[in-house]
Image (cartoon, rainbow, N blue to C red; front, side):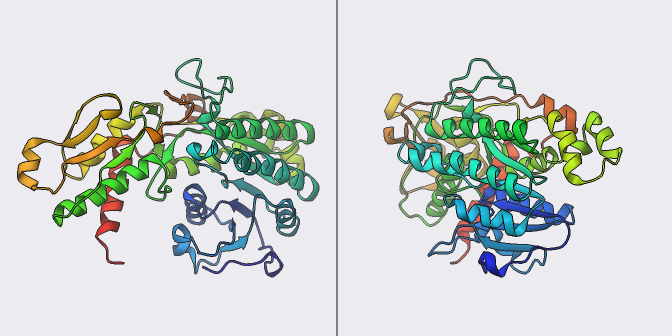
Length: 393
């Protein structure tokens, strides 16, 4: 897909939504959602790479309401130029160093990308388009060392990783700019959300791609390596990313859903800036979650079962393994039988063991509920990866 330099881009007529991180899971899903459900123009920001990585937005190549531009969160000039020239009505920031495990290895980069860049965006919005609505993707990792279960909007921020700390810091600067300058600026708490567009390094996609590879090798009677995982007893609150991007867009238009804000909006205050100033003090930041929790072990078992493979756990500690059941060894006659094993290198320096969200406020205020449950999410991901594995290059 063609990626444009800013000097070659003109601001479209009408409402413009800028999405940073548009080639990633959330950014690409939000672009799809907006193009299908609204009349806005979408401009996606992506870093220029020597090897193009635009698979998630390839289907938008000929979409007239979508453009892709060079954008780099690590460059304050790039941020300022983008906002000054495009003057977007919405800025949705999905770009981040989003892999928690890597945040210990790249702590400074994580902080600069997830915290400092947010400050640069807010300052540019303040200077060049103060009525622009800003959303920053928050994370359940901000809660970290949890004090109570489930976690809601009142839970204190107790991060246990550089990633979680960077998101907690970004939340504070978003609050400062909202309260100091009257910006429509919020940061929702997004619990784990997955799908076929999830990056390969994330545990859910690592599992489903691994399952697809093992299925392929069993069918072809070839050797396969087991999937290697860290703490399989960690509990997470998993949702479908497509459900969440719809929720984010609702969060960015709260006056359409919340009666106390609807009255302000319908009063015809005048300019969009004045409407924003009237709404800003009443803005809320919300938790988005499935409100149920599952272990990584459960995810593994269900992913293999969907693929027609039954396994059994045996051993303990670092020697625990998930292997084919004896009857399947006899029927499938695989070259190998161990499906999953534990690798201590994948344990984090400080683990977040139990995340469970409480999204009741959002569900009530916006009449929202997820369309895809845990089993449906795994089925979608496994079937996608099996199909992809079977297609010729």
